[in-house]
Length: 206
Ligand SMILES: [Zn+2]
Image 1 (tube, protein in one colour):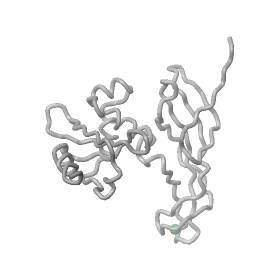
Image 2 (cartoon, protein in one colour; image 1 turned 60 degrees about the vertical axis):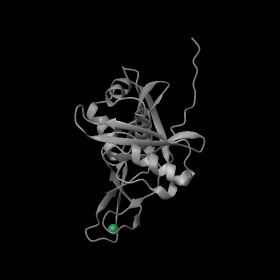
Image 3 (tube, protein in one colour; image 1 turned 180 degrees about the vertical axis):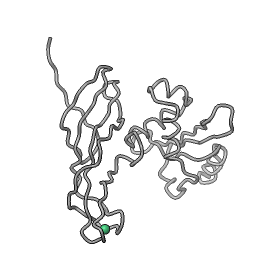
């Protein structure tokens, strides 16, 4: 058998891969360190960089690699403020992950785009996610308003109304657009907004 190794970009900045394992189910388990420097003190808001141990290990779902579920294992560094009373510590915040989420932001945006044209139930089966996990992804990205000022850059808008609960009237509208040569997530709006967004686009295009 020929052994072929290959390089795959995680597309996350300031990460160092320590080890890649494949578990029994074939999932990729990637052990990483953050190489980002310091963080913002949660008390005074100033930049701090005195290391103070690490947070507990998190297992975070990321975009699949070669069709296999992929998880990042990370212990985010903690830093101590030398100026605040009691020298409080803060866990590093990273731009690719929201503190309480079990997924990377890239994975969540991927799921939201997948929801264009699929139901929540279909995504649950397709991506082997819990129903509540998918709802959690939608809720984390939900907003009530579109930033209309940025809309002149939008082309080829996609609109999809998704029902969050079977039988109940709880809807979100996912708005995608063609930005920088690819389809990207633009907004997740609360409620059924297809009509409103459409009439706005009509107005600005005439
Ligand atoms: Zn402080």
